[in-house]
Image (tube, rainbow, N blue to C red; front, side):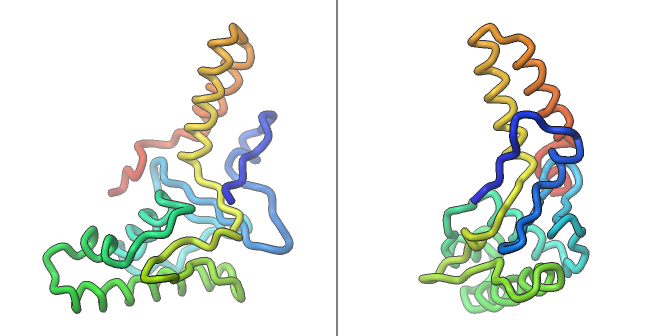
Length: 169
């Protein structure tokens, strides 16, 4: 599930989702500089840019699973199928290792029926999703002539905007 904060947010809560004692909370920043927080602690164990790129792709597709062949074609289009498969397995391992250091004993990344996806039980907060949500709410307020509500929603969106989506890519 994607955690949506309440409409009365401060800058701190807009960036740090509430912590759950039962399932991990991941906060993923895709606007501007890429960052991932697990329980408000930054995940720093990323090995290589490809692991970050595949993780970002899976976040953008969440909650839908992504077929292994789609990932292989997207990230290793010029490799043989066997080489692409080995590369994908290695990258999936690296993603799991990066997340494992922050979230132990919880499978953040699942493999099912030849596809990968983030665990649907994971509490996932994504800045670009919240940005879009605030923009949509702001436009809805404008349509209802609620200028104060619109201003509030647009300010929340503005606070989240730190640069272009996947700007590092």
